[in-house]
Image (cartoon, rainbow, N blue to C red):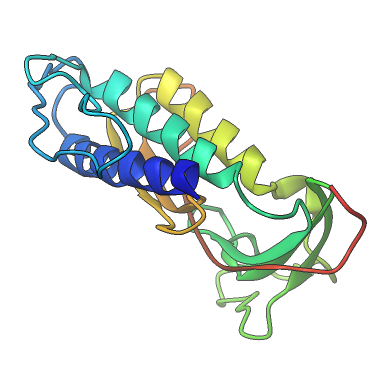
Length: 201
């Protein structure tokens, strides 16, 4: 319980740093972060970051992601499902809502959500929407953490991230690259994560 509370506190403090770093300014800016919040009794007296620490934007984001990843690691099961939507893509079906089912930490199935809008009228003549989503286009929560980290490692122009306050999984991401970059933008929403029956961890 104490570990879970400590990780939640760290995740909260660093989510503030991530939000403050989510600007369109140059990635090399080095803001000075100060910690004025004392940890709860019994968790030690050292702050998350020393008051005189200078942490660059990228390091602050990666530290926040790592802390949320540690909070995610405290979940009770590797069997879960969650709602998901890519918000970038060439066709409506690529951005449609889906349900991702994960068993033993691997994507087991991906289904169209009941409210999935798979066409929007911009499709070429004769275009056929796939009957089912392609599971290779979707990730487990651990996979989403990797997608985010890899994108940030490639020095994007803009980063905005959101995380679940209980389980720490990423609930939203907008990671944009320069127009002449070889890297593709990453943008998604994830929500309504619930455990499902299945084989043990």
